[in-house]
Length: 270
Ligand code: GLY
Image: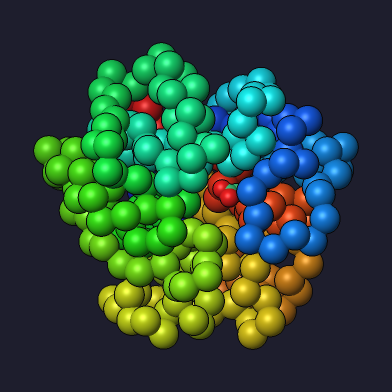
């Protein structure tokens, strides 16, 4: 069995995470298809298990209070991009989520020396569309992230030595990382509809099993891969590849199109 030791790698190794507790208003969270409202108590239980898993790796996990004015604010990943050199405050493309970024900025300023922001009136970009690897930052153009937002991000992170590559989020898919995640510095977990686009050329790709597309949004966080519970065949693939997998309940977040990556910002502040 392959061994996947924790490497000194900024794309999978983190000292900190930021989360935000779900608010009562979560029942008004955005969704592509209405399959019923999330149950807040069950979502809180899943959220607690998620935070416990992050903490079990030795990381510091900051829990921000609920923000009732923003139903989707539990999905903190969309508000910022955290890199080793600094943080970039996003400009979410969903109008109801635009104000979430300003709520996150002061938190990041307490942790980072360098915090910059996407400010162009025509620029929109959400963290869920951004996959950071060791050698590049892939950004999926989507209904939430446009070319102007991607170009502005590229200009902001270039002085920090990062190169941005624009890719395409599959049509009808909320975010690029709805369909993929980084498992180790050279390995991506992906749906076949995304990997078939060829955007992961040069990476080793593990495809999720057909019918388990919702398993693609995992996070590699230090020695763990957190994945949504209920996808046994994809879990078997990750086990067989040597990853240490922790399953987390995601039934309630899934009702409003959220998953493992959406629930945290993961970083090592500079
Ligand atoms: N409900 C997650 C989002 O649409 O941003």
